[in-house]
Amino acid sequence: MSDNTYDYIVVGAGSSGSVIASRLSENPDVKVLLLEAGGSDNNLRIKTPAGTITLYTSKTYSWNYFSVPQKEMNNREMHCPRGKALGGSASMNSMLYIRGHASDYERWKDAGCEGWGWDDVLPYFRKSEKNMLGQDSKYHGTDGPLVVDKPKDPNPFTYRFLKAAQNALGVKENKDFNGGEMEGCGIYNVNQKDGKRLSSYQAFVAPVLASRPNLTVKINSQVDKLILDGNRVTGMQISDESGTHMLNARKEVILSAGALGTPHILMRSGIGPEDQLKNAGIETLVNLPGVGQNLQDHLDGLVTVRSNNSKTLGFSVGSLPAVLTSPFRYIFGRKGWLTTNYVEAGGFFKTPLATDLPDVQFHYVPGYRSHRGRLFEWGHGYAIHVCVLRPKSIGELRLGSKGELLLDYNFLSDMEDAKVLTEGMRLARKVLADTAYDDSRGTEMLPGKDVQSDEEMLANIRQYGATVFHPVGTCKMGHDDMSVVTPDLKVKGLEGLRIADASVMPTLISGNTSAPCMMIGEKAADLIRA
Image (cartoon, rainbow, N blue to C red; front, side, top):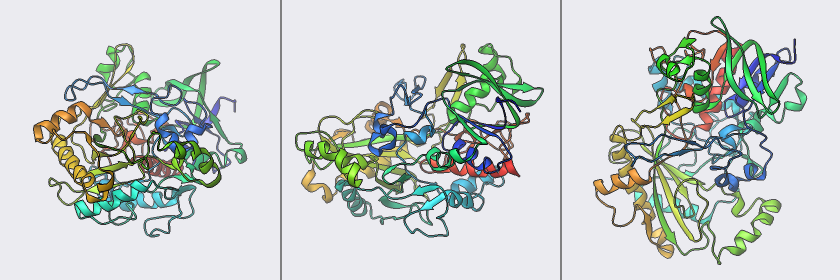
């Protein structure tokens, strides 16, 4: 077997791909390659929780996608950072461990994805997990490589949020959003070990790499196109720092490049909607009209308050002692400013439009934020990001005439999303107006006190709404004409190719997407080995 030939080639060392490569390489008789377009994750900005906000716009660690102008969002081009390093987007996210609601997976099953109901996927969540919190063993595992813990040193204002949410909304504190009940407020579980970020790569691959000669990790290597022999994928052409190379897969290629990266690789390879491929001058090898369609993401609104309290995260004369001592407190005790992931707490809530399930999620920031992806400004405050849990607006990815990726969220194409977000932001306002904040009361900056009516709220959403960075669904599984993979994750019309990442989700789950992607990786490995 040549140096360029492997049994399995896994493309993308993110939340799904790292799990798959680790599990497949447990068999010493198979040769596995984990291929990553980005570079190493050996960087303090990645390892230190507070470093996350420095990564969104990084030219080194983010793909920095931008959407096409969103016609219902004042024609804004909306930023979508995606991780470009070992660990993928789990090397730049907020480290939250949220699985979604059991009904999300029942929806998948009901849509024709047999084997993906809640009872089917729960064992895979438990298999990955090393829960450090003593949470209910019915839902949690303790023997997996993925540490699930609580933040090391939550900001004092995180606890104020919990008190305010209970007072203002009449909800209970929820100490396990991944247990039997999702509704309520609470401190989020995080994927951290010893106060440091724990991506899927660091959890599943890094600890075993040296002891498994059958597992190879190759970085800074981008897939140009897949290679087909008839209807079988036999390998790929890649580009790295030394030029162009061919890689061969004896058994399977598994695409885990994410909801944006995976469909782009397919389309560059001549696999996708025939009309788009033709427009880009790419020969159609397999006409799969669903590639790039069904894009879903959480639409996010922002409620922010200025405050003079220097205990919140931010920069001021009053906070200088905390800021200047933070490296020492972090290094020697895993305490202080650098331990924060900025969204230590939040919760799941019902607006007046909800039926039986929460329809919005809060990400509470104990610091002032002006807009997404920007470092904290001078001064202090606190904020709540509000997102629509089950959006109805559906977008797409298209190929441009030069083969470039065109990202169209199509936000607010269904105005029901705006109604839910408006009501969710009003709930957030109630929380931040609670007496728990009386000694730190400040000025509401967004939406602003003059923004009250439905029409004014809609205008604010159009101007300031953003994505929570949870794109999914662009190679959905199922059996209908627009599905790309069958429930065993095999690409329709092809042999030797599977997809296992956020792109296969037929519908967006009710929460953050990293944990579900790791679950997909676990189940994919079992399907491949079956």
